[in-house]
Amino acid sequence: MLACLTDYLSLCRVTAAIGYLFLLLFSFFITVYTACFNGSCQVLDSCSQATDCGPGLYCGNCPALGKSQPFCTRGQAIVPTSIVGGLPFNKYSWLMTHNSFSIVDAPSLQGVQRLTFYNQEDTVTNQLMNGVRGLMLDMYDFNGDIWLCHSFRGQCFNFTAFQPAINTLREVETFLSQNPSEIVTIVIEDYVHTPKGLSNLFLNAGLDKYWFPVLKMPKKGEDWPTVNEMVQANHRLLVFTSVASKEAEEGIAYQWKYILENEAGDPGVKPGSCPNRKESRPLNSKSASLFLMNYFPSYPVETEACKEHSAPLADMISTCFKAAGSMMPNFLAVNFYMRSDGGGVFYDLDSMNGQRLCGCNTIAACQAGAPFGSCKNITMPSSSPMTNTAGGFSGSVQFSKSASTIYYPNQFAIGFFSIPWMLFLL
Image 1: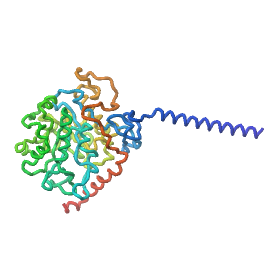
Image 2 (image 1 turned 180 degrees about the horizontal axis):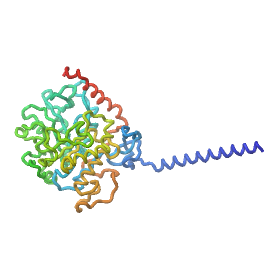
Image 3 (image 1 turned 90 degrees about the vertical axis):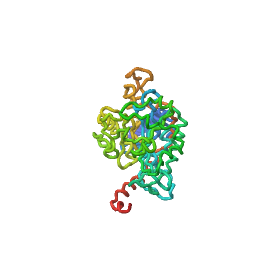
Image 4 (image 1 turned 45 degrees about the vertical axis):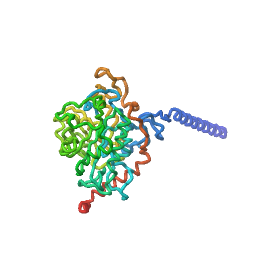
């Protein structure tokens, strides 16, 4: 009797084990069957490679927020004029990259190890293709030419130099020639002392034909021309310099005569505070019709950018909006613009443009020609950016591969330049 009972219990255990194994296999096949792949994955869906994600998305992660497993992340902006066009230029919000030229893994053309901070991870061409419409460029006299350098004390060194500025400007020229309805803004941190150096530089890059004349810029806070008027006149390049005298000498607009700007670096990311930059007039002065919002820390760290571009960014936009007297930023300047916990800077730009252009919570809900406040019924965040004429996302940045190799150069630079004795060597 006891032997029979033992055999029965053993049989029960075997049967239970087989049933449990069957359930595990069934669950596995259901998961595999329902998983997205081959371009069908949307924002926040799990992914294993870039091709899993839909248009305008890439496969990344955000360990700084505890999100180590890769998921589909926004990588391309909706160009607002493709949905609501014909308004004055200052009625739109645009993505701007801080130190657009300071690109990780950019080859050194000076034959020495570059020792500086990095702020972006893809080429200027790729930035423009992804919907960036504002570029911050630091220009210096260097080696008998004008170079882009991420340097200090107003001087470019061989270990802070990136490349001749004309190379990047030719990328801009190519983009403008291939996209005849797009408008690009360049803000120059100007250390060029060569007479007529900047004006000749833009002329040699072939950008003079797109130049927006200083004489036509509003100087008392009035509206700018409409984007349609700017495109029709081919005034599709706005250039600003940090040197006041060059407006009269070279016809290049003095930045703080036309743009309000909050403080850059750590003061610009402090929660609940949005002070104006000392060179700028007060944000609520209404004396200029363009507002540049800086949002990046003093020391750029790639792996922290996805955290910075989550809830804190949306909160800071609200803070700066109030500080500017209910004026929405026209330019949002950030480091590592593609890093986020899902929607990032693109989600916030969609929200800003939706609110200001059509009274909707996202630009994707706007309807061309419809009354203000007439919104399509869509959920937030938008599953993927709408196709626009600016070109497709190239999927060239894979953070899962580059995070560790990119992170350390900036960390080394932070430590190196924080050593007090370095001041005596420079």
